[in-house]
Length: 157
Ligand code: 4NP
Image 1 (tube, rainbow, N blue to C red):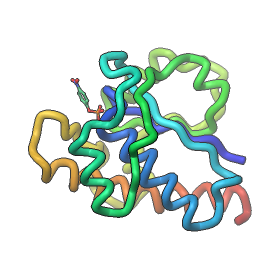
Image 2 (image 1 turned 120 degrees about the vertical axis):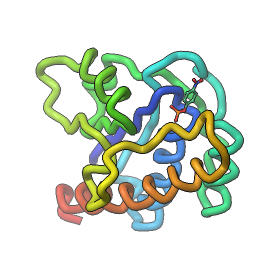
Image 3 (image 1 turned 180 degrees about the horizontal axis):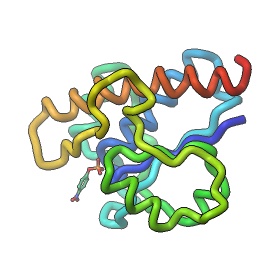
Image 4 (image 1 turned 90 degrees about the vertical axis):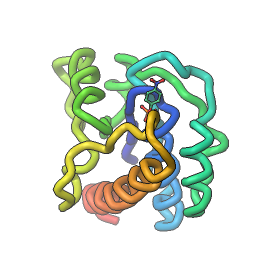
């Protein structure tokens, strides 16, 4: 069993997109019983809210349903539970590092460096137009494949 937590700022755009895309991929590969998935935000602004409607509709166009997801804030206890804590950008990563216990043995890092992509951060689409949400999906789809390959290898699947 591997446990994965995706983290962005608000937990209404990028990390729920990653949560939904990765969950769909895990289900398609028949690995849902082997991988636990959640997402969270470093900030509390949107706690309890569903994903941003722009993120939800862009995802649905690619067959990914985000409608059951609700925002929560990342907490120190997440480091006791998750094997992979994956930040969308450097600001998210620095926030997580500031609360990470010294004895955390899992992966705490950015999402995109798991891929061969030259970009390192998933850009925040919140204040932009719809193209930003499609770009997030392109990046997250590629990185989700790479993450699942890594987890499958670790689980000898
Ligand atoms: P996310 O996007 O971190 O990808 O969920 C944002 C959502 C909300 C805000 C900023 C970014 N906000 O400032 O409210």
